[in-house]
Length: 226
Image (cartoon, rainbow, N blue to C red; front, side):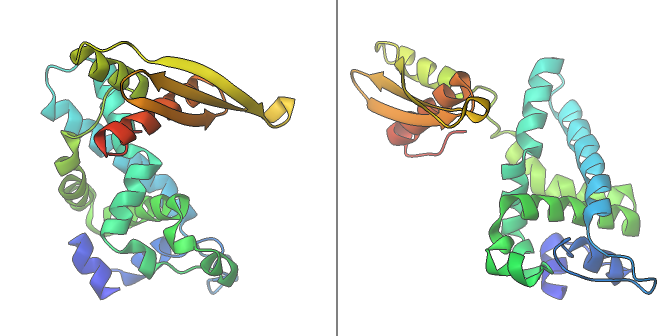
């Protein structure tokens, strides 16, 4: 766990806290009383510490943003994909304690497991070193990305990109609907006369259109858009 602590930038006084934060519920670990030990309780606390700290950082950094823009920035910074990316950057997956089945199915690379474990680690830092220690870790990892957060959805960004070039607006077409009535998945295509097409699917028409726009934006810019 020494390598992970170096990547985190914090050395635990109570190493068992870090060990608990790294223990997934699939790992059948028990305490002296026979109760299961995993990172779910720490994840609960870490989620709250992270949300508060990121909100505070944004409040101080963007004094002219209204509540709506702050909320959009916050949501982008604490979403699962962002947490999984940071967890991957510090090598968290390699340090996780997983059950055999979860390990065999690629659990060390699953976004849900990585993001939950990162929140648990944040809670462990908070308990072991206090709010300032947790804030230091969060600031170090999140502040560099604060100014790169996208506030607009893919459809809006695609429309603005085309308008800025004086090009026709994109058109969206429903291609198909898959699944049962209670679990439908919509497939949409977005088409432009100058930049080709993109496709996407989602559990609502709006979500599918956003996915299609993101697909086309990636083709145009060479970068992922979500």
